Amino acid sequence: MSAWNERREPSATQRPLDHRSAWQRDKARILHSAAFRRLQAKTQIMGVGLNDFYRTRLTHSLEAAQIGTALVAQLKLNAPNQMLQALLPEDSLMEALCLAHDIGHPPFGHGGETALNAVMADFGGFEGNGQTLRIVGKLEPYTATGGMDLARRTLLGLLKYPLLQPVRIDKHKPCKAIYREDEDVLNWILAPLTASDRDLFCQTEQLSQAPFIRSRFKSLDASTMELADDIAYGVHDLEDAVVTGTVQQHIWQQELPELCRDWPPEAAQFLRQVGDKLFHQAHHIRKDAIGALVNRLITHVQWAEVLPDAQEPLIRYNAVLPKVEQQMLTLLKSFVYRHVILHPSLQQLEFRGQRIVQQLFSAFHSDPLRLLPFNTQQRWQLQQQKGSGERVIADYIAGMTDEYAERMHQRLYGRIL
Image (cartoon, helix red, strand yellow):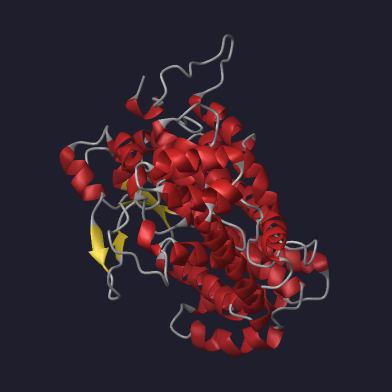
């Protein structure tokens, strides 16, 4: 058996007559986990409960899974040789990665993530992808201490940032990295790599705003999953904003010429035509525009040899978009960010959610043995002996849905924020 198929828990053996692949088993563990179910009541961009059309973290993850398998199929068609074809993940593995990629995100979207990082700045910080690895590797009670006990390749695919959090944390912006408490999981994932491959794979670059560093590389599976995530975010969240009237056509038409100024004429014309359909009154025409955008991005995916000196092919190759299609996706994501996420109505809700998260942490941190649930109290006591009880409080809050966090806040503070 390949090292990438191995699991950390030797006692968690395959059940009799279970002939599923390792990736089918991993997908099932994720799909049936409590952490995955909670995504149905966690904010994607627009607040849960404000409108039944809005995407939640759950519907976003399902759409990402569909896009992810389509990317794998396209990469198979584009593979220059049989070795690379065989390297591609099975559909079950790609679905598992896309379904699980957001389970570490706390309530209230990225605002909740920023708030948890701020209160955890003196205790190792908080970051959504790091929390995802923590959930699947340690917290989800499929095993006593090994979380979901996923196969090593699945964990590698979820590892978007293969580095540890810096010692000094900036409370204003989460550093995309793995918690120091989970260094053992990170080391186990990377164990099959040679020392030289690990040095290549874990390269970082210093960002202008200290103490931030950024990892430079990810595996083939993680690059494909992240691309599926970006397409779902850039295209489908734009659809939400158009249908609900958060953005209007005149804004799109005003900005598009400048944003596409240096593009090839064909690409600029394509986006203009898509825009005309995107803001059409007929729903089926809008859907056609969304389909055209997703189709163009999926069908242009390419192989890239990002680490040619690496011996392990899973880290040597990535899925990428050509320059024009990457510019197109970046334009969509930035448009959503500027005109949806930064919209005052969403910022007001985000501010409220951040206050809830911060005040919940303050309450639990002030008297954990009085306010935390009994099972969480036990975990807190064990970790507090190691000097990391705050991480247990962050785990508890991060696992809450938006609605549960609201109810807990009302129970502790009343309705006044």
